[in-house]
Length: 128
Image 1 (cartoon, rainbow, N blue to C red):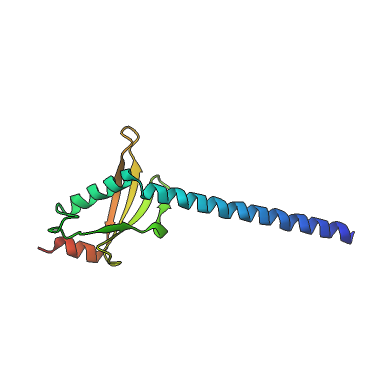
Image 2: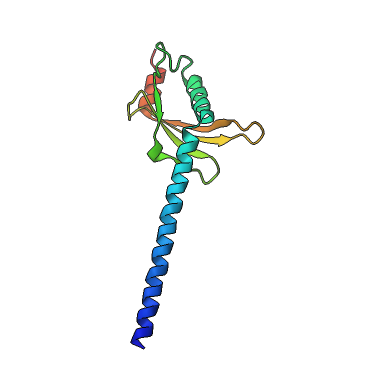
């Protein structure tokens, strides 16, 4: 009786550890996939088009938006579709643009479908 309970316990622990490992592996694979999408040329074009709509001189010496980087640790899939992306402007963590990027089914291009910005970024863009 004791031996059978021990065997069952060992099997349950073994099964849980296998399941936990596959869950962790699946999460890291998903994260790597999101990073690959974020680093793609199509993403770069979508982000830069979005920035140019906010600041026509973006990414030039005359623009208010000089640089940007995608926060890879904040990437996530949107339950409604697309990829949630956090863009840090001018290496300032207070100047943040949050967006959802989706792939257009007909053209295959990435497009920003939602844009949210911090108050500090909004203030920067409104300054003359």
